Image (cartoon, rainbow, N blue to C red; front, top):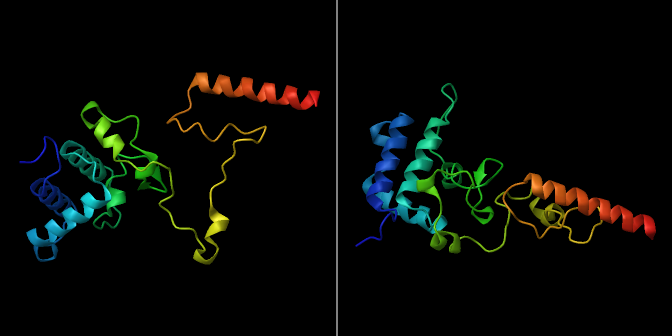
Length: 178
């Protein structure tokens, strides 16, 4: 028996059919149930923490966000999950976590959060694969005019901004005294 709210192959197939119908993919080009089972395993290996309500909500949000006059194709998993996760260049980035403004029924559980990667990383490949080290994002913990990189909280709040302004003033005062 499946765990409550755990994504099942049947729900995955139903959502795949819903997307195919929305994209007006002809019947002969749609995924068969056997292919859908393979796609289900592909999806759950990339996004193992997703529950059924989250998957259905993200798919519906993706469908509602389609432009009516643009060419449409079946989404990649990262495109489909973009409404649920923080995004990088329009793609869901699991290592950045879930979006903070999700509806109540889509809020991640503690078990789901435990399945997310521990360290943030990019989902976008560097433009030059032969010089990938040149595209490592800059992080600083000791630069006097940058906030510490260790603060990985989801959003800038008025309190955080005030703390940052005070921190910059302290750093400027220390530099003036030196």
